[in-house]
Length: 460
Ligand SMILES: Nc1ncnc2c1ncn2[C@@H]1O[C@H](COP(=O)(O)OP(=O)(O)OP(=O)(O)O)[C@@H](O)[C@H]1O
Image (tube, rainbow, N blue to C red; front, side, top):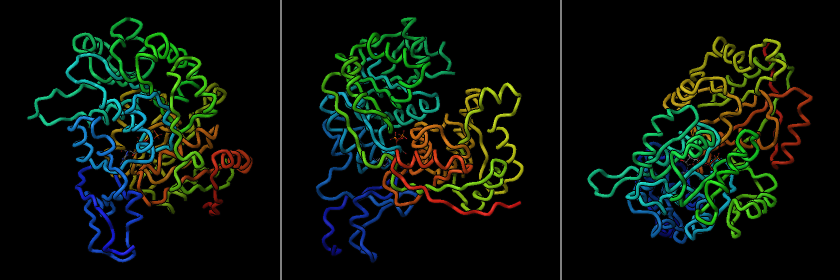
């Protein structure tokens, strides 16, 4: 394309967004530097802000639906070009259809459903108008943060800003009780356990609820602890006829069956739309998958060699949960053994952190906040960090223990490659023993990716 024919350019400034190269830019980018293509950026010169002349910006997609102060906020933080799921789902959501958002990890589903919520709520009304259900406290805190970030308004403006309450396991439910009674928030982000307690005790009701979002819906339906409460929420505490229902996940196994169940069981209305983006490739294309075969006793050393050769900017090391048998035998969990090993042997600059179910909620929150603030981290975690957690600076995932299922693999791998328009490559490495090659091959077939063998010498 000639430089003089580059069409309309949208040029803006970015303040903070974890934002990189939009698809449109790759199309416009000339081979030689071109003075007609402007690239304004926030922190990185890799943040161009262009839209093709005929494709709408995120603001244009939302105009006439989402209030102006939220649109301004989108621009301020650098959400300018819609991702594929936003492009496909927002018009459907704004036309008041129930929706199943089924799109890759890191594709921007959170912003999609939050924009719907902001298009419907009335901050002047003191009533719970939107409810977002999440599987873990960590994901709840993250969604609350994004919701609050969009709600921030100019104090000089007269309109009332909407309030967002995090009603999460491990929170101070007493304080929330008084808050809910005195002045109900506009949006509640909740884990199902805490929500149920409040609904059972009739601390608040869902009579004014306009939107119900269930994030990581397949996980919640699969969890024996949570599924009955979820069903109650969907059919007893509120009716699908009185609300707009949105289910979101990167993985919905047997999705045709799920859509059928949604209608049959009245979890959604009959005209629910299944927005399935990138159905051929369920994982982001920017991920490079590798495996290394070694003996069980060599895994620690091998991980260390990988860390030395990869030099990740930030990484997550996934470890399997300790079996009941191993607990009974009085063994230390693999997470503890690995953390101890890394703290004594790893001499790189990354901070070593731990996140697992056994930790108390304060330590869990501290680990996540350290990761978000620090210069780089190596997080040792169980699958608790596999769903929804957004740490865009993570460049490497290590499966120290192979996940149990392909769906678990997809979510673990999806903790990296979370910059929707980035050209960067991210790496997922599986440290396996030879008997596990077959299981990994099964994941490759199911998720349609190729895992490359990496030959690495293990130091004695
Ligand atoms: N339009 C956009 N432009 C730039 N960045 C975006 C846009 N929408 C979302 N993002 C960023 O993309 C990242 C991933 O978004 P999000 O957490 O919503 O993914 P997700 O689809 O919910 O993933 P998962 O299935 O893993 O939970 C976030 O860091 C978010 O800030």
